[in-house]
Amino acid sequence: MNSSEVKSAARVLEILELLTRVGEPVSFGEIAAELRLPKSSAHALLRTLVGRGYAERDDAERYVLAAPFRNGGWIGGADSHLAAVARPVMEELRARLRETVFLGARGTGGDVKILAKLVSPEQIRYDNDRPGLRPAWCTAMGRVLLAYWDAKATAAYLAKLRPRAITPRTVTDPDRLRAIIDRVRHDGFAVVEDEFATGGSGAAAPIHDGTGRVVAALNLATVTRRFPGARKKIIDGVVHGAQRISQRLGHRPSLGSAA
Image 1 (cartoon, rainbow, N blue to C red):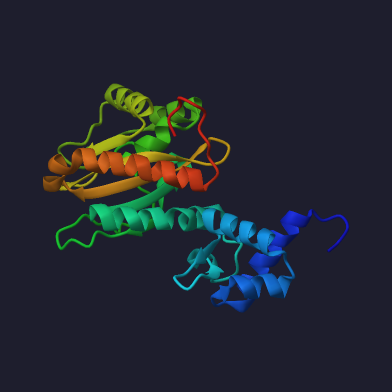
Image 2 (cartoon, rainbow, N blue to C red):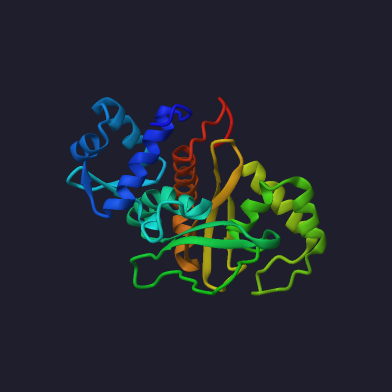
């Protein structure tokens, strides 16, 4: 190791480089032996990499690079890292609530780019394969991202907005939209019913990184006819799911604050 290197950082990079080079699941013992790492250090570092979404551990206790980073190496960028960290939580939510789960982040101009999607296993389900950005002002994820954006940036977005009715229930009045976004910030989640797509409803909640900044939104989406009976379950699920992803990103909310 170079004398200018930080030992723990170098060891993390060595593990990532090994997982990239091998390309298949490798056991804890093989990693520790190959890199000549103390077992206690190797265990702690691997646990951290799995917790942060850079690596995965299979049922045989073997380790492999997380799926989004396998093509082209482990440096997948912030979006790939977010998707990798969120995926186990998204999978659990889909399995438990049997609804479609989206992960979205702020894209160009403030609208929403989809980073990941897991479609409901139900035969009748909500899905959306529309390419490009989703409008922030009429989607649950978008309203979350507007609510937790810089206040001046949100104000500028809304000032430039010329909203149109996408469905008969789309809110287009600027004052109502501002009130809705303020309410999202107060509640910690957003709900949209039939505003972006007729027959589609759902809820979204903010995902914070280790600095406390909101970097993404988690969304549970369903067909509108199922939403009234599942409303509380969906809201609770998406809020708790977003909190878990935030924790995996290193977020530790202060006592008494919302995650």
